[in-house]
View 1 (tube, one colour):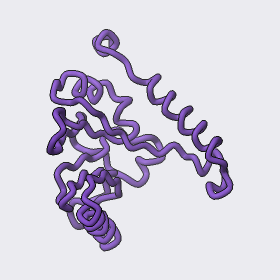
View 2: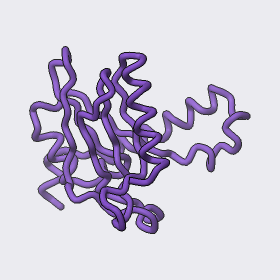
View 3: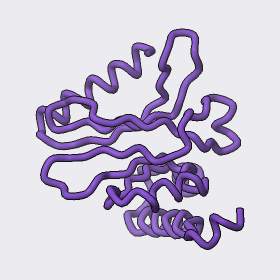
View 4: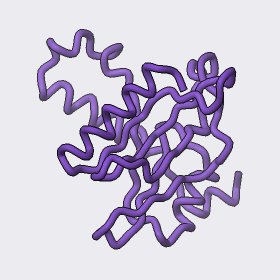
Length: 160
């Protein structure tokens, strides 16, 4: 793992421990020396320990230039104390893949889904420091609606 990524993950672990919160962070992650990078989400518990990891499997066009696709085309699941359901984790375009949607739908253990996304807000809205909160919220709502439109149910999976 490169030094910058290692430092970021260690900082996130220290922060989670210091504030006694769970964190989900996403970073470019190199599993082995000489191997390419994966878009990776790490779930860190309130004691600063990694409890779950998910490699983004479904890359958009631009990402294919920089990242390798994850090896698993399904949602990663982790459990947090005092939460009665499992948490499903995928990244951005993973949700557009029907096998990822199926694995989430068919896993009765998943009650909450976390899907970190990048919506290109700085490209669409300009310098973020100059964007009003109302404008930023409207952009986020539009992006969320676009992602929600991509979700389908079991009747569509069989047709693909």
